[in-house]
Length: 114
Image (cartoon, rainbow, N blue to C red):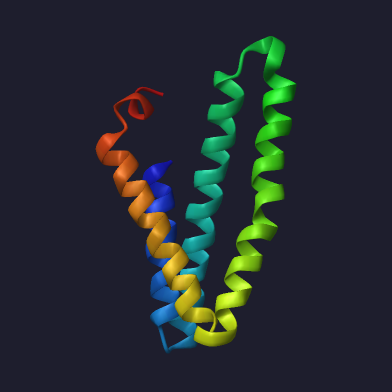
């Protein structure tokens, strides 16, 4: 999952830096593949690790965190996009995701056991 998140960030950064439309489209296809892979793996892990009695509650909180948190990130990005433009902001968000994924890979022994 973390490798998929890191690959998503790398492909997205590549797409923001590319000046050829065909290459950008190929990179965005790869980006979408890795994002889908990462989120479906994450969703599966949450469902598998949640106790049976709490699975519905855990999934609803999980869904709220992801769907409810997106507008706040979009609001913050939108404020910066006006000054810097969309490609640099998307690249910065992707770079932060790569750093988080690599940090968790390096330090997350418990996560690897899952």
